[in-house]
Length: 167
Image (cartoon, rainbow, N blue to C red):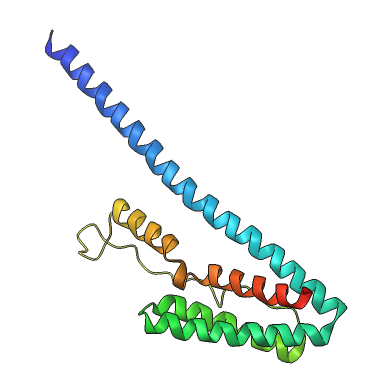
């Protein structure tokens, strides 16, 4: 074998390895997106049911949204006591929105509180910058921690609130 053919074989292995890594990364990313998508679909159905109650029975809607607000506040306190300040903040924001809906009878506004804070990207020599593997690991841990997952908590509270109303 010549040096050129060895170089060609090495390049082939590098390309194959990069392709396999890319596919594994896409699969991990797709799995997370599918989990998020199914959560959002379930949440959208529940919010639609809540909207139907708002239209058909405004007094019941105010009662349900007040109860949801109280439960979200409790979940926020629980998340904060577990050291998850980001989830606690999101849950408090949702609780506030449901409280407003319970007072006004208006539709619950589930838009985020504002645009994300934009800043300069971390530099390559920034010691706080995370690699792709670390970010993937953090995302998986976040998805696995259902105890403080704001969307999971909201979905569960909505399911329970709507189930007790239809019983």
